[in-house]
Picture 1 (cartoon, rainbow, N blue to C red):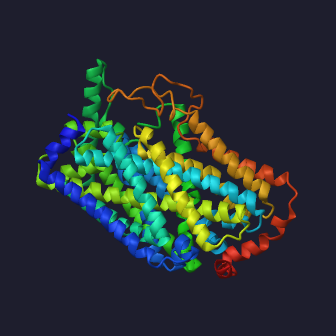
Picture 2 (cartoon, rainbow, N blue to C red; picture 1 turned 90 degrees about the vertical axis):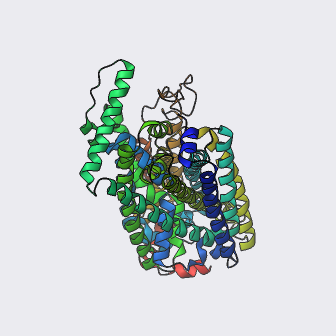
Length: 572
C-alpha cells in the first residue's frame, strides 16, 4: 500500500485532509505574523544581525534549541533508531555530547571577541580580506548542506499528510519552503528568526512529550516492555525478509538492542562510525547558524546561560528520540512500517503519532498525525531561516563590507546585500534539494557537521588558544578542511556506488545505480578531513613569518576571557 493510500485511510477523507491543511496554514501564518511584527523594530545592522543583543539567556537558550533540534533530529534520528536500533541512537549521543565542546571551548570566548560572524573573531588579529573570504565561503558551504536536509524533510512531510505520491508536489513543497525562508530572513532578520525559533522549540518539546507519554502508556510506562516489543518486531521483519529471499534467518531480537547492526558489520563500517562520531562531536562548535546565536545576548554570562538552557532542552529532547524511535519499531506495523522503510526512516515520528492516536482510520490518529507533522514543518521553517541568516550575514558583513568595500559600507547597504544573498541562497538550496530526496536527512546533517568540524572549528580553536597562529594558517586550515571534506564526500558511497534499495528499487546513492565513481570507502569524511585541517593550520602557521598576529594575541586573549573591549567593538 502506498503512502497515499495510507494517508487517505488514516485521514478518513476530506475532513481530515482539511484539518491537515488548516494546521499547516496556521503554522505558516503564525510564523509570518511574528516575522512582520519583529521587522518593525529592526532598524540597523545590530538589530538585523544580532537582534539588538536584547535577548535573555533563557530566550536565547530556547532559540538555540529551536535552531539545533532540526528536522534531522525529530524525523531523521527517530527514523535511524527505528531502523537500526542501538546504532541509530548514537546520533542522539553525538549531537548532545557536542554541546560540551561548544560550552567549554567556544560560547563565551566567541561572544566576547566578535560582533556578528565567526570571521570577526578570526580577523581580529589577522589580515582581514583573506580570512573573511575563507570564512564566508565555508559558512555558505556548511549552510547549504544543512539546508538540503531540512528541505528534503519538508517534501516528505507534505506528501505524506496531503496524501499525494506526485514528485511534483514534493518539489513544489521544497520551492515553497525556500520562498518562506527567504521571507523570514529578508523581512525579520535575527529578531524575527529568533522568535520563530522560540515558538518552534516550545511546540516541538510539547508535541514530543505528548507522543512519548502516549507511547509509554501503551506499555504501562515500562521501558523494558517497549524495547522488548521493538526487538521482537525487528526479528519478525528480518525473518520475513530472509524467507522472501529464500535464505535462513540469523536475526535475534537482541541484535536490535546491541551495537553493531549498522556500524559493526566490518572494519569499514566501524571506521565510518568513528568518523561520524568525530563529525557530530566537533561539528556543533563550528556550525555558523549556532555560532551567530552567541552574539544575540548582551553579556558573556548570558551566553553561558544560553548554552546551559540549550543543553537542558536538547538533552531532554534526545531522550525523547529514544522513545520515539523504539516506539515506532514497536507500534508501527504492516503498510505503515513499509512507508517508514521506504522513506529511509524519515516518516517514523509522524506515523508513530498516528498509531498512538488510535491508528489508521481514526480521528485521533489523523489529528495527532497532522499536529506532529505540522510541528515538524515549523521545525523546518525555523531552522532554514537560521541557516539562511547565517550565510547572508557572512556574505554581507565579511565579503561585501570588509573585503569589497574595505569596511566602509553603510548599515543600509550591508543589509541590502544580506537580503539579496538570501534570495540567491534560497534558489541554490531549492535546486540542490530536489535531487537529494532519496537520502536520510539525519545523514545529510551529519555531512554538514563533518564540513563544519573540518573547515571552521580548527581555525577557531587555533586562533583562541595558539599565540603563533596567523593568516596563512587560518586560510590553509579553512580551505584545506573544506576542500578535503567536500572532495571525500563527492567520491564516497554517498554520491555513487551503494547499489539499489531492495524495497523501493531506487539508487541508495545520489547518482543512479548505473554510475559508480567512488573510491573513498567511508560515508562520512571527518576522520580524514578534520586531522587534515588541523595539520594544514599548523603547517601554514609555521611556514609564514607574520608578527602582527602574535603581537595581538594577548589583547584577544584578555578580551575573549573578560569581555573587555567587546562592547566598544559592537558600537564601532
